[in-house]
Image (cartoon, rainbow, N blue to C red; front, side):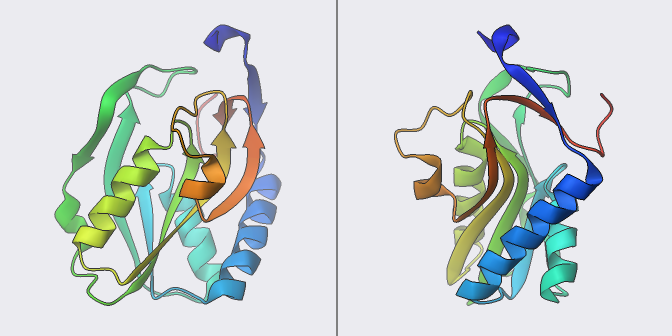
Length: 163
C-alpha cells in the first residue's frame, strides 16, 4: 500500500551530486544539443545538467501524471500534455529529456514520443530518481530510461518542494 512506503527527502547537496553523476554518464555518450525539462520538477535538474554539460538550449514541456502535489497523490489515467508546441522544432537534434522522478514510467514514455514527433534524431532520458513502488511498465526502468540517478521505493520530496 502507498501508505506503507518510505518517504525520502533529498537535499540540495544530494541533488547536485546526483546531477553531476548523471552529467558524467551523459558526457560519456556525447553531450546533447538540447535538454528538455518536464514541467515542473524536471526543469530544475534540466537546468543543473545544462550548466554542468555546457548546453545552452533548454526547453520545457508540461506532461502531468499526478493529480496534485500531495504525498502519494493519485495519478491520472494517462499523462496529460499541455502545449507540446513549447518544444519547438527539434529536427535532427540530439535531445536529452530530463525529469526529477519516474514513477510509473508513463510520463517519460509520453515525453519521448513528443520529442520524437518534434523531429529529434536521437532521444535519451535522465531522471534523478526512480520510484520502483509505482513502476508498472513491463519494461524495467533501465530499458526505458537512459540515465538513472538513484532508485527508491516510496514518495520523494525534493528540496524545491514544500514538505
